[in-house]
Length: 286
Image (cartoon, rainbow, N blue to C red):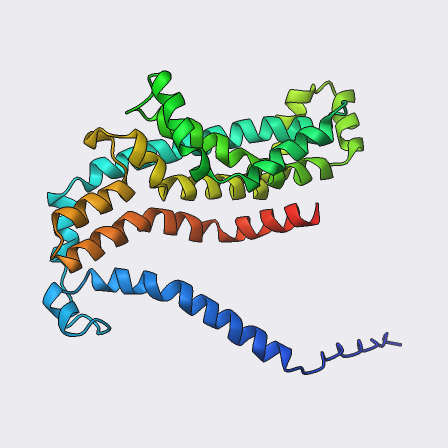
């Protein structure tokens, strides 16, 4: 006699509520407000300045590529992009390495004053970098670091460590102690356990802190403005200011330069979006 299959009961339907359309409408409004300026800047680079003056909210007619070509060939864009990349990658590497080391100790070691030390790091979230810009400049000047990559990288690493530790510590704490004991039985030391087990399991958090550090460093303006007096060391945010000061009446060219300057960070953030969401969710749960 053939076996009969019992149909599974239908999934319960969620009750309809006015809150659902309101939530989606609010999310769409926030997304539109966030995306509209970016789209305007990118599309504006394909227009001419007379087109923008005649119709600021219009579409390119015709589409012009000269602005982007001129920025890529006649300006200091590539040199400034190189400076931004060196500083952003150096900052990201320093933040991830030092953040992992500090978070690992605070998550896996038990010692007197551990929670007080963690609280000290979290208080760094309340300290704005702008408030320390003057003593920071004087300290960097005394260390002869002005007009060097280190003058930007080291302070950015220091100011990014609090959020890095806050995100990484819950991930490193969530790894079961039994897994660490099993690794110790197999002959793995603490550093080997960190490298082979902890870091792969904490990949979403590592990507999150890496992307946040990279984007923040790429978009930094005030610190490079004060410590990078040499034009050859200027980053892209400073390049945007220099370009807009040099070509004040060329609105379309300024929009093209601005869109190219923000494009790498925007793409980097977009490609790692899922990892960032997972890393932040794990930090909140922890």
